[in-house]
Length: 252
Image (cartoon, rainbow, N blue to C red; front, side, top):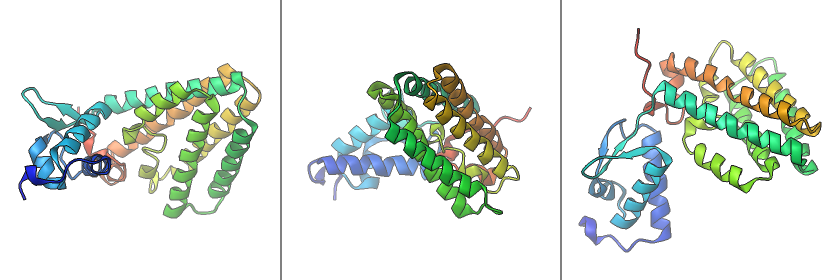
């Protein structure tokens, strides 16, 4: 079938093209800096040109592709500094969310859910041994906690910006957590993160805006340690979704 013979575009085709192409990039099946033509992607995904064009444009907006002068796209690569800055930006947004939640008064229902998550993570960390399955559970709870924090801010604008920012998977709150599964300091890192969760919930409950913001920004910076570990460990970086896009540091 020729590329122009595919059925007309539908919303389902557009969503499929976006999801499949994003996964090809983040799973490392499309190499960093690899050039992508619209026609080649059409043939690979088996959908028409219109949804492929929309997917390519959307992924360029998300920062996973960059447009090439003269036409087409290339898979974007990221330096350690790029990832560091993305983590800092996420921390700034989460700090604002914590401040808004404290100063405006967070929903008691959301605060109760946050405390339930803290208690659930306490049970995981309190075990004699933390398994890979426990890490998966921790990641699930961690993602829920950070989503609750954004919801507690009561700001739709902040929520939209946070969602846009964390489409880069290594900028998300759990971006580098899985890389720690076999790390010697894994329990320490989880414990420090958990204490950050506990402290920011307390600050929000006490309506301490400055403290809540400072705690959340510092909490996000734990990901910098995880980033350094992952970049120094080839096995760990393969566990990071999108890790193949991060350039290894240049040896001095």
